[in-house]
Length: 153
Image (tube, rainbow, N blue to C red; front, top):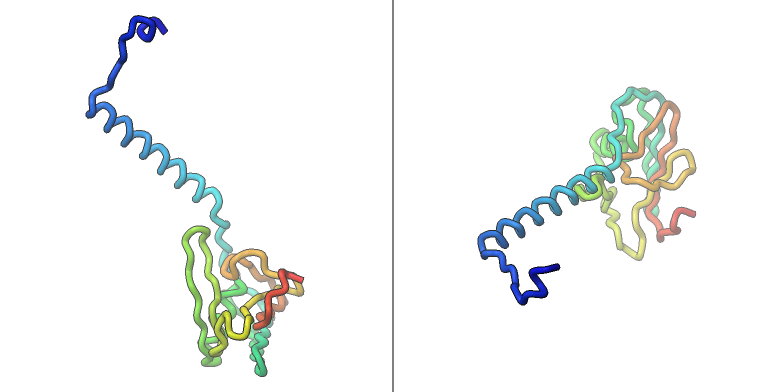
């Protein structure tokens, strides 16, 4: 670089530095936003499902719910529907990144009590996505258990 050999140092004005910094921040935020949007789970399409079953196993109690048909076709939505229909409490935390809900309590049994947490399965398969992103189909069996986490086993 010829200007460096001559001992000339090119300095940008503070205003140019500030504008460059703001531009870099804007590009970084836009890039982060794009990545987050790309990683969001796909929305579950609302469908009418028939003969889905819900089984909730707490510590010393259980709840069964079997609607003939419902448009609440996710593992979370059918649980929420049952809580309204049968009158039991349901607490959860909605998250934005990644988008989804985390169930924290059912029927008064709260995550962490005795080292137990709420986990769900659909037709015997451990839930690997947020329950509001686990779609259901006709005849599916959703099971929520309040137990010491097994890691999906």
